[in-house]
Length: 312
Image 1 (cartoon, helix red, strand yellow):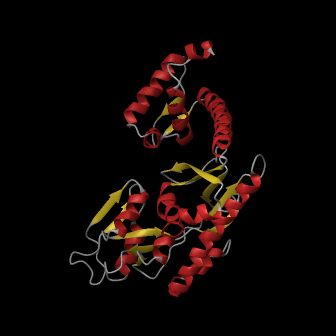
Image 2 (spheres, rainbow, N blue to C red):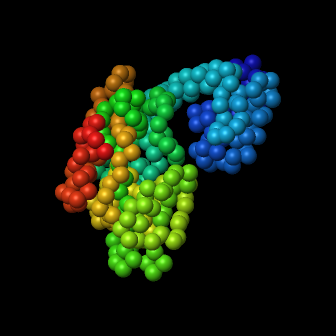
Image 3 (tube, rainbow, N blue to C red):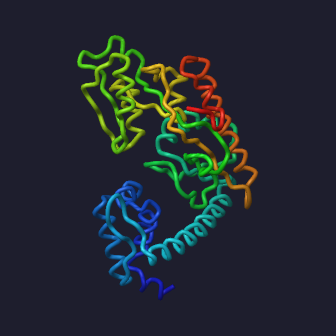
């Protein structure tokens, strides 16, 4: 162990490296670690200098791992996973609760799961949820978590079918009654194309002079809830607020990009039965929300989202 300490500038360098290697993007790693992007760059440059090896190839749109970087990533992921499992076991001994780790988006956690967390606790009083939150696109490896929500094109995405991915233009009730004098604002997620959403608005005779852009989709939805404009409401995230009538369709049309939402759940190891029960609960709750919206807004045709492989 003394030799390992001499080979690393600090233990923290491994945490920074793991986040940067997983995202292959220094900015996203910085967001996850709650530090600045230059701080991540300095830490990784210091690690590379200390090791005398290049770990990343810098460039656009991100940072690709070198062969040395891939070797270190494999070792660090394995070590972190083993440490995490032992810490879970220690925590379970102390609390008497089973820990289940979810890998989901920050927006899903904020706007769908948190409003029903008391319902979850009533159903699973002996389960302690832990989160691996993803700020950007929800895709890629599960990194050993118990349950992961992922999106992709079939057959490239494994796991249990939840729903076809879809969004509906949404806004707060009354935002368009009457429409703002200068036209409704378009609330968009930075880095994603918003032309399709804008075209839907124009098709309904709605001008869109103003735009608001945010780097976090959770904030996009929060802005829509506060009556700041119209946003693309991804159905797995806004379904709760639509059923609560805190968000309503701005246009009676949904857009399906052709991907599916699926849940991958651990089937072996300690407490695998609990993991499967939690997974089943998540799927059931999401699909129940969609069925309620299909009844509330039949013109949207939301019921088709529950059919795997259905056409757009």
